[in-house]
Image 1 (tube, one colour):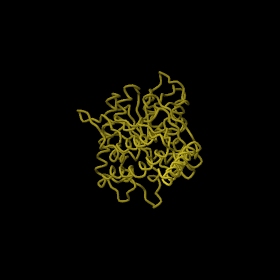
Image 2 (cartoon, rainbow, N blue to C red):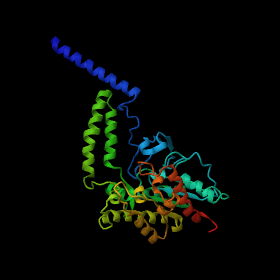
Image 3 (cartoon, one colour):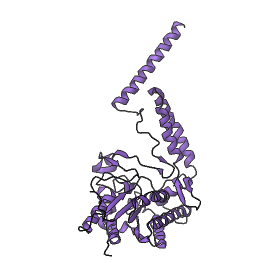
Image 4 (cartoon, rainbow, N blue to C red):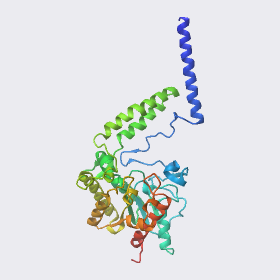
Length: 380
């Protein structure tokens, strides 16, 4: 081999070795760009519930611009084998107490053990009935669960947990999620009922691509693979996957020209799934009086957004119509939340996040408890 070629080869190998060393060093002290990807897993994917929580997950709230004084709060969520949250703040269940299952999305899932809708409802119920045995509460909420997923989840949980009551918390994003995210992934049984919601193809592709990148022994190769996967491959896949409905889950609410007629297709899918969910729960529980449907507003449905527009609400009337037709209780929480917040709905939410802040969760729990208490009071 000619000396010049040998020098070039050695120089190239040396530089590659330096780059490899730098990448490993930054991983050890940072990382600035994660190349170990320890938390990447396909365990979150489900062909029954689309996506499921891990048994243990630790989260940290982001910047003060988003979460105010709570920024930086770190908490760990622990769950049992059914995906139901474990809560260290509540004592062992009393067999004489009513058992209450909460279904819903991240609004139900909550934050640390103290700051969940289920915990705050439990505390409010204790205040309303201090002499009664503390109810047993099950928190099965998980991010982005909407009625399409809640149907198979209810079929999984109710026979095992045998709750006396089920509280279903419906969020404004559920209408868009059912239509945009899950409608094409629903699998039905021979009777046409929802049997499951398959894992989202692009979610599986994203995780699998990172797993494939992690398989490389060299960090430099991992970096090239990961960059190509996240910056080139996935944006293309996402565009292709979403091209059939290029809107967000809250587009119907944000649309200043929105109407029930304009979003008739989305509302029809949502209503069908809510109706199947209520029907399923009544069948499983054997009594329509053991179901409470709850709907809450987003901030911009209580106060106008930055452009002075009060957002639409097609969710509440849809759920109300289903509840009325099926004979189950319905709580439209907007009025109670605003009244408890002193007519200023803005104080219920994080500064720049759609969810309720800690104070809002406490207020919301109290509102639910006042509707739930008459249902579980044996003297009624």
